[in-house]
Image 1 (cartoon, protein in one colour):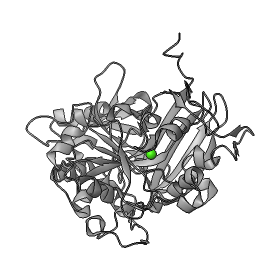
Image 2 (cartoon, helix red, strand yellow; image 1 turned 30 degrees about the horizontal axis):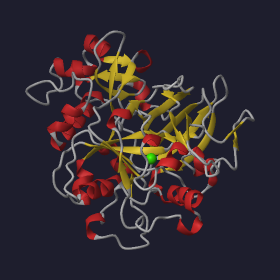
Image 3 (cartoon, helix red, strand yellow; image 1 turned 120 degrees about the vertical axis):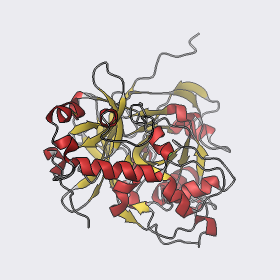
Length: 424
Ligand code: CA
């Protein structure tokens, strides 16, 4: 197991921080009215890397790339520059490293910003967004509820990573309030559909993979793995009642288009390297274009909390990314098989991550078994789906020896539906 790398930023050496020197995740921040720009989390501080680039402590290209409110420009420079930046950041921040920053009191003072005084923004421009369905326990649970236990897994599921094209425009950063959507609903006993606010609004606990290198041809799983820049937590907000009526035969549409929240820090594939693990045993041998030749999943503990308006926070689920049937690399490789071009900033949702036990379920749909088995929060109230005023928070971290590589939080509060947009 890999060990904590010590930094002269004291708070980065705590076993309790998500952001030790081993992590160095990439975000976009601002303080007050300043322009948003690239920053790196270290302990409870943000390192203003746009300032370090301006002061020539970091040089990546002839023109600055870190003074932008997104990391896409760095991604465009390619994997060699990604590695160069990480090496340079470690040198500047490690104990007894390069003193260009640690030995310059004035620069240190202006370049290290307390995280709790900053606003965090979307860390990238999401060029396109695809959501997959690669969690076997989730697929079996949902399939059982929607189609019965015998047809739970669709016949294609064990052979291809199933996905649908989502909406990049709907992706928002953690902390953004989520408005309960309106939609067309029809229960199994209703004769006709009606237009109403969703009554079965839900989360999906997922990981998001960010494509950092574009491609315009079919690529291998190994190439796909190398093209992934980093990972975020992702909550695919889902209106189950809208979904149940609209999804056949083309898949989810408006049920998934309200919002998708992501955590504000991109944890790089480099930071996650010590936590790689294998995909599970296969029921059927995968076709060659989906075969992996090394560990491309990650051992990342995940959890979800629910906080009612003014109430106590309850953990409602905990699981691990390592249960997924397909890695993000396999999903990305599959995505390219048709010749589909992939772009820098493409976001791939993993699919809901549920484990084998009841408390490992990554959606309220599963936790309450379609509303038939409401679950109890720590204050004694029960939930089947999200109530107005509820805050749902995803957390995730990989555990090393005396440290963790964390993602921060991916949180969102659900507001009541707006007044009817079509009032007569
Ligand atoms: Ca999903």
